[in-house]
Length: 153
Image: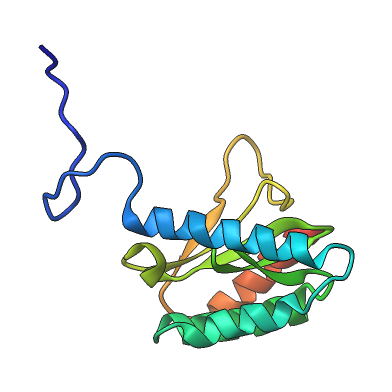
Protein backbone atom coordinates (compact mmCIF):
# COMPACT_ATOMS: atom_id res chain seq x y z
CA UNK A 1 0.00 0.00 0.00
CA UNK A 2 1.43 3.38 -1.04
CA UNK A 3 1.59 6.26 1.42
CA UNK A 4 2.21 8.90 -1.21
CA UNK A 5 -0.47 11.45 -1.99
CA UNK A 6 -1.20 13.39 -5.12
CA UNK A 7 -0.19 17.06 -5.18
CA UNK A 8 -2.96 19.54 -4.45
CA UNK A 9 -3.60 23.02 -5.76
CA UNK A 10 -3.92 26.10 -3.58
CA UNK A 11 -7.69 25.59 -3.60
CA UNK A 12 -7.34 22.00 -2.42
CA UNK A 13 -8.21 20.43 -5.77
CA UNK A 14 -6.20 17.34 -6.66
CA UNK A 15 -4.35 17.23 -9.96
CA UNK A 16 -1.83 14.98 -11.57
CA UNK A 17 0.83 16.57 -13.74
CA UNK A 18 0.56 19.99 -15.32
CA UNK A 19 -1.86 22.73 -14.35
CA UNK A 20 -4.33 24.03 -16.90
CA UNK A 21 -2.21 27.17 -17.29
CA UNK A 22 0.92 25.08 -17.95
CA UNK A 23 -0.92 22.96 -20.53
CA UNK A 24 -2.19 26.15 -22.22
CA UNK A 25 1.37 27.53 -22.39
CA UNK A 26 2.62 24.30 -23.98
CA UNK A 27 -0.19 24.44 -26.55
CA UNK A 28 0.73 28.04 -27.36
CA UNK A 29 4.38 27.01 -27.82
CA UNK A 30 3.38 24.18 -30.16
CA UNK A 31 1.30 26.62 -32.19
CA UNK A 32 4.26 29.06 -32.34
CA UNK A 33 6.55 26.30 -33.61
CA UNK A 34 4.05 25.26 -36.29
CA UNK A 35 3.66 28.87 -37.42
CA UNK A 36 7.43 29.28 -37.54
CA UNK A 37 7.83 26.09 -39.56
CA UNK A 38 5.18 27.24 -42.04
CA UNK A 39 7.03 30.49 -42.51
CA UNK A 40 10.20 28.62 -43.40
CA UNK A 41 12.91 30.91 -44.69
CA UNK A 42 10.49 33.80 -45.04
CA UNK A 43 10.44 35.43 -41.62
CA UNK A 44 7.06 36.81 -40.72
CA UNK A 45 6.30 39.93 -38.77
CA UNK A 46 6.83 38.45 -35.32
CA UNK A 47 6.77 41.88 -33.67
CA UNK A 48 3.16 42.43 -34.72
CA UNK A 49 2.31 39.07 -33.12
CA UNK A 50 3.95 40.23 -29.88
CA UNK A 51 2.12 43.56 -29.97
CA UNK A 52 -1.18 41.76 -30.58
CA UNK A 53 -0.52 39.47 -27.60
CA UNK A 54 0.31 42.48 -25.43
CA UNK A 55 -2.91 44.20 -26.56
CA UNK A 56 -4.91 41.16 -25.37
CA UNK A 57 -3.55 41.47 -21.83
CA UNK A 58 -5.58 42.98 -19.02
CA UNK A 59 -4.22 45.83 -16.94
CA UNK A 60 -1.78 46.12 -15.22
CA UNK A 61 0.05 43.43 -17.25
CA UNK A 62 -0.66 45.25 -20.52
CA UNK A 63 0.68 48.59 -19.25
CA UNK A 64 3.88 46.96 -17.98
CA UNK A 65 4.30 44.88 -21.16
CA UNK A 66 3.84 47.88 -23.45
CA UNK A 67 6.43 49.94 -21.59
CA UNK A 68 8.81 47.00 -21.27
CA UNK A 69 8.53 46.36 -25.02
CA UNK A 70 9.46 49.99 -25.71
CA UNK A 71 12.40 49.80 -23.27
CA UNK A 72 13.73 46.61 -24.85
CA UNK A 73 13.38 47.94 -28.40
CA UNK A 74 15.25 51.13 -27.41
CA UNK A 75 17.80 49.58 -25.03
CA UNK A 76 18.58 46.43 -27.02
CA UNK A 77 17.59 47.16 -30.64
CA UNK A 78 19.42 44.06 -31.91
CA UNK A 79 16.87 41.79 -30.21
CA UNK A 80 13.93 40.46 -32.20
CA UNK A 81 10.49 40.39 -30.59
CA UNK A 82 8.72 37.04 -30.82
CA UNK A 83 6.24 34.92 -28.90
CA UNK A 84 7.56 32.22 -26.60
CA UNK A 85 5.04 30.00 -24.78
CA UNK A 86 2.51 32.72 -25.55
CA UNK A 87 4.59 35.42 -23.85
CA UNK A 88 6.43 38.40 -25.32
CA UNK A 89 10.08 37.42 -25.69
CA UNK A 90 13.17 38.94 -27.23
CA UNK A 91 15.77 36.91 -29.07
CA UNK A 92 19.17 37.22 -30.68
CA UNK A 93 19.98 34.82 -33.53
CA UNK A 94 16.79 32.91 -32.74
CA UNK A 95 17.72 32.32 -29.08
CA UNK A 96 15.63 33.88 -26.32
CA UNK A 97 17.50 36.44 -24.22
CA UNK A 98 14.62 37.74 -22.11
CA UNK A 99 10.84 37.44 -21.78
CA UNK A 100 7.88 39.00 -20.02
CA UNK A 101 5.60 36.70 -18.05
CA UNK A 102 2.32 38.44 -17.22
CA UNK A 103 0.95 37.84 -13.73
CA UNK A 104 -2.26 36.51 -15.25
CA UNK A 105 -0.39 33.84 -17.26
CA UNK A 106 -0.04 31.52 -14.28
CA UNK A 107 -2.31 33.40 -11.87
CA UNK A 108 0.71 34.81 -10.05
CA UNK A 109 0.83 37.72 -7.65
CA UNK A 110 3.17 39.68 -9.93
CA UNK A 111 4.53 39.76 -13.49
CA UNK A 112 8.15 38.85 -14.13
CA UNK A 113 10.96 39.84 -16.45
CA UNK A 114 12.99 36.70 -17.03
CA UNK A 115 16.36 36.09 -18.63
CA UNK A 116 17.56 32.88 -20.26
CA UNK A 117 21.00 31.36 -19.94
CA UNK A 118 21.81 33.14 -23.24
CA UNK A 119 21.79 36.46 -21.35
CA UNK A 120 25.22 37.43 -20.11
CA UNK A 121 24.21 38.23 -16.55
CA UNK A 122 26.59 35.81 -14.85
CA UNK A 123 27.91 37.20 -11.60
CA UNK A 124 29.93 34.81 -9.45
CA UNK A 125 28.35 31.51 -8.49
CA UNK A 126 24.76 32.83 -8.19
CA UNK A 127 22.68 35.59 -9.81
CA UNK A 128 19.01 36.38 -10.40
CA UNK A 129 17.49 35.13 -13.64
CA UNK A 130 14.05 36.72 -13.19
CA UNK A 131 12.68 39.83 -11.56
CA UNK A 132 9.25 40.55 -10.12
CA UNK A 133 7.49 43.53 -11.69
CA UNK A 134 4.57 45.33 -10.10
CA UNK A 135 5.08 48.68 -11.84
CA UNK A 136 7.69 50.42 -13.96
CA UNK A 137 9.05 53.47 -12.19
CA UNK A 138 11.95 55.55 -13.54
CA UNK A 139 14.35 53.70 -11.20
CA UNK A 140 13.05 50.29 -12.26
CA UNK A 141 13.29 51.26 -15.93
CA UNK A 142 16.92 52.35 -15.43
CA UNK A 143 17.69 49.00 -13.79
CA UNK A 144 16.05 47.13 -16.68
CA UNK A 145 18.02 49.09 -19.29
CA UNK A 146 21.26 48.33 -17.41
CA UNK A 147 20.35 44.62 -17.24
CA UNK A 148 19.56 44.58 -20.96
CA UNK A 149 22.91 46.14 -21.82
CA UNK A 150 24.70 43.47 -19.77
CA UNK A 151 22.51 40.69 -21.16
CA UNK A 152 23.32 41.46 -24.80
CA UNK A 153 26.95 42.46 -24.34
